[in-house]
Image (cartoon, rainbow, N blue to C red; front, top):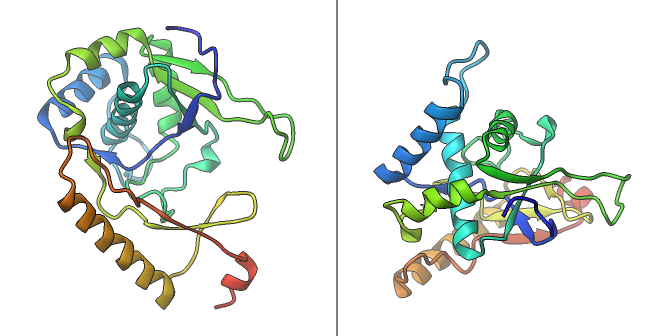
Length: 219
């Protein structure tokens, strides 16, 4: 481990990982207390405590490590990206996640490959990639929690509107989106009840709508 040789072996960060398992909280508190500043801030109180934002990050690193130790997570390091009011950000992860990542990288807990940008829609553009370092993987291996202790955040958006560039688009609910969301929610409940496997997640997590955005917004 160390250098990320293939940054394209990756997936986007999942900002809806969550767990109240006491051993998860203990590991994240250990990381925070050893490497990160206090929760106090001179600005407005965050919607989600910074320690909890760290927990979301650590949990997704843990899940990626279980799937494949070489798998990276794609992370935007732009403060403009992290919109705490977005319907796609139920846990209100903020731009504070950026200095948290930088600190963990400096502490040797992350492997990191910086993002690249050559212009709009250039094929080689990519976000920063991160994964658990050998040191953090060692902590994961010793952890007293398992994959089935990691769940999903309440309120995760199930209906995703995409534009032609595959970017998520904010929208106002209509009768149709409300109906679709309820159908997906019920499907997930039935599926989880029928397949109580360790570490199982719903087959349909998000229903992705690719619509003409200009027409959709006129409704």
